[in-house]
Every structure is written in structure tokens, then in C-alpha cells.
Length: 250
View 1 (cartoon, rainbow, N blue to C red):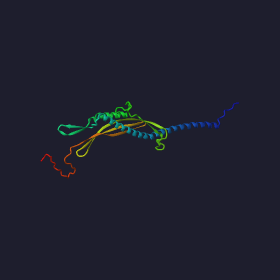
View 2: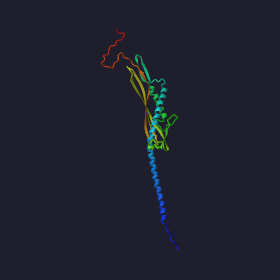
View 3: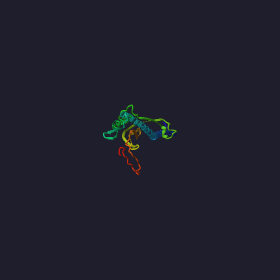
View 4: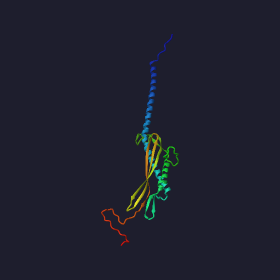
């Protein structure tokens, strides 16, 4: 006599249904986890990005200003040891000399200074990415930003793991001269020469880049030029100009 196979009980069916439900829950949980993780990474990146850029811009401006001042001091003392910024020219038969700025400033000093600034900052007009680094270059800066800065609160700013961020420098250097003439007393003039240096730098971080211009005005020197003092000087037009006779005349 044959017996029919017993059908699974109701409890066994519920057990298998529970297994299927656990699989679905696991899949849904995993998908939600991926979405939340991706959103968290995006949020942290966007929140920490302006903090990194702000710190980078301050550091780049400070370093570029120091490099500009150091380059001018070094090249001026090398090319113009006597600090002869203004040259004096005398002509036969003319008691009044003429003055001009030293042409070396337009050639050797300008060329050497721009080259030195580019070399120290590690940038080049031709191809900044293929320039070989040397020991005097400003190295790529690496900052470690705490994850707590995304909260934008002072209490939690230093909490959490530190994220390393490397910044590269890309840019070019421009330089021009400016002259200034200032009256100093009666027929006297003070000539000054200024160098205006502009370093257009681009701070590059893994997810963002921004141009950071740095401008510095350097006073290269000047000279006080005395003029001929007249026998009479007045600024009031209503005054009568006296007639001054030479002591040898009768």
C-alpha cells in the first residue's frame, strides 16, 4: 500500500517566505547604503571645498609675496651694486643736467627677476606641467583638513579624520614699471621708480580650480633733483612782481 507524499506544512511555507523576505531586505538595505554613501561623499566634498580653497589662496599669496620681494632684492643688488637707479647726463654748454632711469632695469633686472620668480614658484609660461622641479621651488602644498569642518562650527571643526589634499600651482608672471614725479619745494623734484609685478596663479585641487591673482608694487628707488631757485617766488597772482637787478648793473 502506497502513501501519498505529505504536503509542506503551513509553518514550513512561512519559513521559506521569511528567507525570501530577508534577501529582499538585504538588497534594499545595500542599495540605500550605496545611495547614502554617495550622497555623503558628495556633500562632504562640496562642504570642504571652499575651506580648502580659502586656505590655499592665503598660503599662495603669502608665498608669492615673499618670493617677489626676495627676487627683487637679490637681482637689484647683483645688477646695480651702487643702487644707481637714476642716471645724470651732462651736456656741453648746458649747466642744467638731464636725468633718466637706468636702462638695465628694463633688460637684465626685469628678465632675471621674472625668471627667478617663475623658478621659485615652480611655474613657467611655456609648459608649467613639464617643468622639472628643483630644490628652490615652492613645492606642491599638502594640507590635512579635519572632517569636522563640514559642520561649520568651532566646537566640531577639529573632530574627525584628517583628509589630505594636494594643491598644484599653475600660472605666469607679468612685470611693468611705473614712474612718479613729486614736487619737493621750489623747483625741486623727487623721481621714483616702481615695479608692478602681477603673478596670475591657479590653485588646483582634485575637484576644483580657481585663479588667484597676486599683485605687488615694489619701490626700486629714486633721486632728489634740485632745481634752480628763482630770485622771487610767489603763488598769489595779485602780488606785483618786483624788478630784480643784478648786483653788477648800475
